[in-house]
Image (tube, rainbow over all chains, first blue to last red):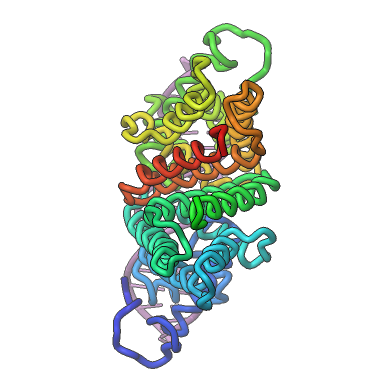
Length: 211
Length: 211
DNA sequence: GTCTATATAAGGATAGAC
DNA sequence: GTCTATCCTTATATAGAC
């Protein structure tokens, strides 16, 4: 990578993360290009068009397309994960429900639909791209840890039964991912609602104290 | 499409489906090319290399790359679905477990891993490709119907409780898809086993008669 | 940091011979 | 049905001016 997450706070850097203004503009242009053309149709030319600058200016900031895409995935993952971690400290069951609603909203707004579409478009490449694969491994690891943490807290507080938190977390994550994936790659409109209902009743049955 | 699923049994057609020998060879070459280079690296040249023939010979059979890919997805879906439908008439709970084991094997052989990798690589394109999207909608519809049918049979036979078969089916499908997807696009090796255990205990709790 | 111009390769697709 | 040869477009990436 040309630049990216190094610590030195050079001029023009924004408050969050380690992205210069120019780099962030390129990331946003990449996002728009992905939305319009999908991963298969993504090119440096397209990104440059969205950016309103020349192709060469992109190569000043990133050594190659691969480099740029790696940086973009890190950028997107960062924003994706922080959107999930916006949680007040409710009771664990409500917190769990809010994580589900965040990742798998019953009525997603256009922005969420787009973010997930872009994300899943990239994730499809992880089948054959090792760098992407590593990054999505980390993303899922962190999501699973978040869910597991909530379940563990519920157990400690005595709100939940003494279940295997890891199993529950993996089940919930897989179900969310599967429904998210289905929503983004098919037109089975009623599926998500059915999964949401079933997932909630599963969690109630699995976690509620009197079994 | 140039040819494909029309009914007339022209010369050179194989027993199953509506594929001529030449077309099936192209499908197999496409499969190998996808395995080696992934969707992003798939080109007519690569397919021709795998086929051992010239690019032009492919254009004799298919009008365009898009045409070829549509045919390939239909071909792959056909083989994928028939692999799931290989079920003897056990009791419904065992049949359910075998569907899960087929789609989400604890120890997948290399062939299954490859089939799923290719499949998910294509599915990633359904985010932006309407034709693919329609085909995956149909695939998921049929998988859901298969699962739902087993649950309904169990209810009729009195083996299962009177649950909402559709909800259970959508839950199971989403969980399977999510775990399959995770396996193909990340390196979280223990996740599938955890999901399998959790899914089995969910089905036991949800379906067993005395609630 | 950004531009124009360009090198070089690969892509999809067709023409016409066999 | 398959081949070679070719057209045209697009892609990644670089050089060198400003």
